[in-house]
Amino acid sequence: RNQKGVGLAIADCYQGERRNLFVMTKVPGGLNFQQTLASHHHNMFELNLEYVDHLMTHYPADWKATKASKTMRQEEWRALEEIYYTGKARSIGISHYCQQHIEDIMEIATVSPSVNQVEYHIGSGDVDGVMEACQKYHITLMSFSPLCGPCSYEPKDSLINGDLVNSVAQKYGKTGSQVSLRFIVQQA
Image (cartoon, rainbow, N blue to C red; front, side, top):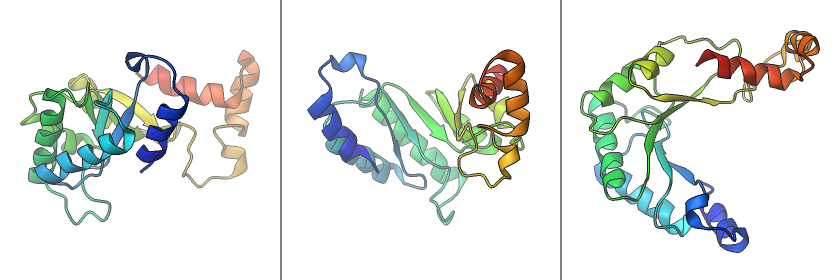
């Protein structure tokens, strides 16, 4: 919900060519075909752009999971493909999709998601096979909260300056954050 501010910042501050600016936005999960198109149209209006470089659905359902089904995910994906085919998004993707959610949309997809943004960091593991599914379909895994932003943990377990990451960091002349981020990169 920051499209309006981003659009104003681009208009007020960006002096370069549009092709050199990468803009990504999302539509909420749990929308039907027309709602998805309308949501993206609203994003474009607030961004004051003709297209975005990447568009993703934010969740495989609405936030309360009252609108959650394979059929709904497939309908929303068809709308994202429509947006892609009209040129209003250069690439499309998903966010917070587990293996089954990916399989749901791949059954009908004519365009494969380019990205799946999921919470992933040291300690989170691949609890539902999402990394395997992303590899199977050549979907890039994008880490959300790579330093464990919303997590609850003891200070000694911090992925920024906790005991483990700091001990590894000292060995290699790096920071705890660098070690944590490098771990994610090496999982690919």
